[in-house]
Length: 243
Ligand code: F6R
Image (cartoon, rainbow, N blue to C red; front, side, top):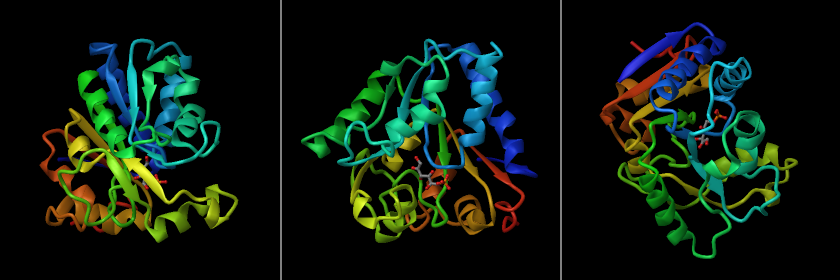
């Protein structure tokens, strides 16, 4: 595991964007794994900047989302598919049909999870997976005690996650979905390069446990210690508990 400590979150964006630039230069039809949440937004902005400057094209690339809420209508603005389109994929030349997320509207949600892993495999696997980390060490919606070998599957959102996310739903808990489909930790571990970002003091304990602690389902992101090519990019605050 490679750990890169930068002074401020904005210093991480060019470093991570360089990994995309290198990948897309070598493999224009690369498969990208995209996270939602606030942490990767600076990276997405930098990728958009490079695209607009003519330095980068995503025209032949494909992308898979990490996770999706269950049951939100297709036109709901808080669907992760809509979110990623707003903040990234709709701002570059990625073809809309080249962006895929777990089908949170499927009738058979378990089958949708299996189909999603199959679609990733058929695309040749994810070349570069970007990840945020939760303050409790979660990766995607794999909360503490998730199986380290889990596949894309249906999960029940914890009361805390629903409460945390209520701000995106007019602070109305009733509007927050109760379930999600999430890539499993085993699915994430199959990406060829996993880049996890963590910023801010509230991520410091999780970063310490996941980088220096025991590999354990208690801190799901610790599984990345077993990844053959994992890069962790953290700011000074998030790195403050590392030895
Ligand atoms: C995003 C995701 C989540 C976030 C994590 C951190 O697709 O699955 O695991 O990466 O909750 O969220 P932020 O970046 O908002 O701190």
